[in-house]
Amino acid sequence: MVRLACKKVQKKVEEELKAKTDLLISKGNRAPSLAVIMVGDNGASRTYVKNKEDACTRLGFMHFDYRFSEDVREDELLNLIDELNKRNDVDGILVQLPLPKTIDEKKIINRIDPEKDVDGFSPINVGRLSLEEECFIPCTPKGILEILKYYNIETRGKKAVVIGRSNIVGKPMAMLLMQKGIDATVSVCNSHTKDLSSYTKDADIIIVATGKVNTLYSSMCKNDAVIIDVGVNRIADSTREKGFYLKGDVDYDSFADTDCQITPVPGGVGLMTVIELMENTYLSCVRRSGI
Ligand code: NAP
Image (cartoon, rainbow, N blue to C red; front, side, top):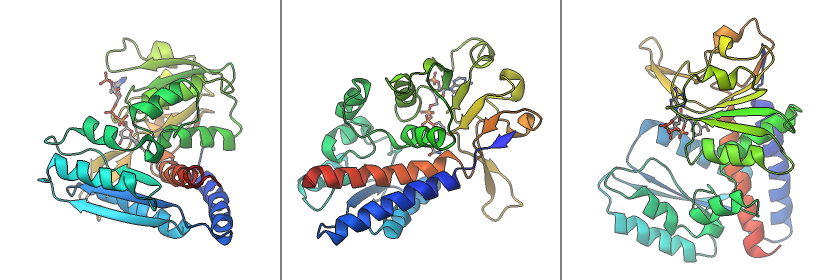
């Protein structure tokens, strides 16, 4: 089995982005800026938000942080988004999901100006993606394409299976893989798919995004498949300092004697998601200032 380490890919994208950002600033433009809104104190969300803020600091981006308690009212969030939409010094607006059940997530996301929707979740950006128009591509699928590109993995004419159909991973991933220029033949599976193996068995590329451990194991795959494990599952373990460890959706160990290429968890797709968010924020800054 070959481990597709993503640290190298992330480092390459980050170095290129830092160079572009430094050039932008040296020409007298202001640094790209990201507003991050987080509600509640979910441990995983806190980690993701911290990773995003750390990336902003490393790249010299500005970031504006907004924290709310679980009982924040929907209209308070909507008012903040309206204000951020108008501000010239804000290029990207990110609302960390999930939001508490009392808040209508769709309404919040739809309120973000599509030109600042650096997560690419708003209907306008989703529509543009499906029409293959310029848009903000959702960060996780965008990062996965970057991994495939870095490792010279051919997509044209290949059979790709996406396991999971969420709006943030599965659907945009499938849309990207079928785009002109990428040219894979794509199947998309969900929890009602009968006999998952019949789809994965002859797939060249498999993207697994279910949030369920051991969704995919070696006997379900060709001996030389490329497997991208998107899942992040917290497994309780009292011997660890944090009380848990992270595991993907793939039964990694079962692939030891195969020729499959697999992204690890941790150290895989998650690293790419953050850097692609930064790339989208940079793109927004450039587009909005007409440079
Ligand atoms: P989600 O919204 O819960 O969607 C999961 C999808 O998987 C659903 O479409 C579900 O089908 C499908 N599914 C569940 N069990 C299945 C099975 N046994 N066979 C086939 N399909 C199955 O999750 P998500 O937001 O896409 O995230 C998926 C995983 O990726 C999570 O672990 C999440 O933490 C992780 N993630 C990681 C990153 C990163 O940067 N590394 C980014 C985003 C998400 P139904 O539609 O029928 O329910």
